[in-house]
Length: 288
Image (cartoon, rainbow, N blue to C red; front, side, top):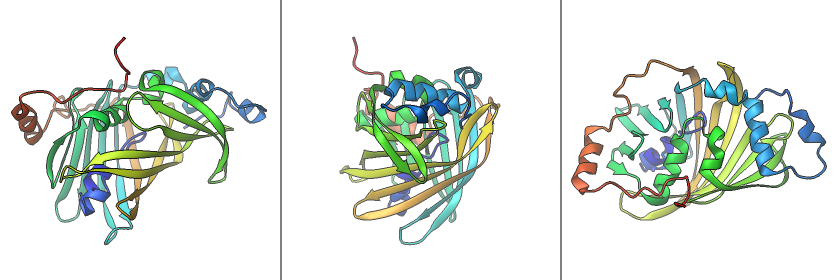
């Protein structure tokens, strides 16, 4: 499960040892949240978060992102450390590369149509609920498109999270389990996300992961605020792992090679060999 969990680290984002690892905000205009006596609507919180992160106009100037950093996983048989690089581009192109000592490599991504993963267990193309989840994660600047990705967004309360007074917001996607996100009431920072993820392991069995993602160390990059540290707590199969991504550099509108998002040969062979494309129940909801 290492591959399945590690590939999801993102500045959003992104095997057994390789199976269990795989599974900013400007304050201006936001302090009034803390003054509200009744709960604001989910829509208001989402839009205020966009403003706090830098504003819709600032995000719309960005069309790609390259993030490089380190990863550390604890809680398994032995701690593991490695490097991680994530390439992202609009509208939903993504390439994730994790490298661990000993030549261990995990890749995952999207060419805009196929959402895939390549690890020691071999290539995998995601379908159904897993595909919808991967498509949400690959959507570039997904916060701007929250109305396309979730059918319902509701503020259900207030809660203290790591010293932050937060609004607790439940986001319900068109396919998959709800995601509970805690937004700082003073500035709108998304502080934590809790959800249950379904995955299919190499043997074809479906598992449920209890997942918690903490976003820390927000810094401004090209006019927008992004977390430079993601801490993922994963509970699965009676084991708990903590996976920490630390981003050392984030570059926008980078010169990404044209073939960066192409399917690897093994994934392309799997796709072509199936005789049909995977099912595509994406996050935009059922057809009208």
